[in-house]
Length: 493
Image (cartoon, rainbow, N blue to C red; front, side, top):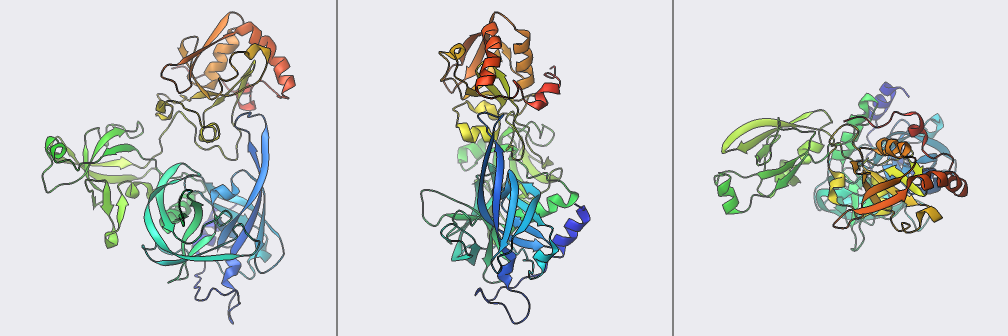
């Protein structure tokens, strides 16, 4: 797909003014509801527990046409998509789409419909500005409970950083009291004052009433700017841990006068380095905004935002200026907009995880997918930054029943810390150790959430001999994934 075509199509999106939401065509122009579509998606995803298998499924979501054939929707609606059908409310014809760009961090995606007939009665919608608390909004989409387009009206209840459940990221989110139900995801939430998109519906929250959330225009625009170069870089991680400075004694200790406020840096990600900020720095200003003692800044209109807001709104690779109080003196510095390099892989959508089968033990590289699916009780250091480039956590994702595994069938959901006393660098390193040990015993040091590591001891020869029969029994095509069959072994360090 031509990059310039994509940019031009989005950049020239026509302005849509919705002054009436009745499902009637205007005397001039097209019915504005034509731009709000239903997505029916068939998926093929990897089985995290048994990575050689695939899981098929499907679901539906909503979307808003914002350019020539481009539909803005949620990433979780089209992740692992094998087939996408697109329907408009005013006709029964089917159109077919494909994912052009997807950002799992922001839970946003662009689906492209190539058929030129699709756009013949559609005026693309325009993305508005981030609304204010108490603004009137209208959520439009195709939620459960029926097959036709649905409307729910409400107000903006709250605007703050929230956890995006699809990407495990903390970004700006908008809470609305309009009902957001499964199927609404990806659909537009309209600003009643302007008729423009005030957000994209994307998740709810259990345990409360009228707790629906939408992705604000700030995040949508970041996504659209990000893909202008033809690739998705995503959003910056939280690159430092902050401590509040509301304690008078703590402020005196760090030589903060009454005329200053800020937060203390308690930890810094390796990707930042000491050149930018250091532990015990007091961040008093970020991107020109004064930082309060509770980690808030105030943007135009005196609206509160988190200290991380100016960072994650920038593109990866940019710098955000800071003023810090260091040993009582004000220092001007900056922090890079970057992603952390953690030992756990990020979400693995539209791709297959690696695996290695040894006897009844199934090893794979830890990923967010695995952590959500298995819900293991590992210690927090699994999320630490890598110590070196190929440093990745390895887990036992499954234990296949066999006589050689008696006594250990309950040891799945285990992080493999050591093999024969050697720290495991990555899955290739583990394979190297196991393949080189054809007899004797192999000792695995496992983290299963207990205070001390659990030691698993297996007979190397017994498990090597058992591997072929176990593969046949469980229809495993190979003892290791394709990427591990030809790739080099562990990087030395």
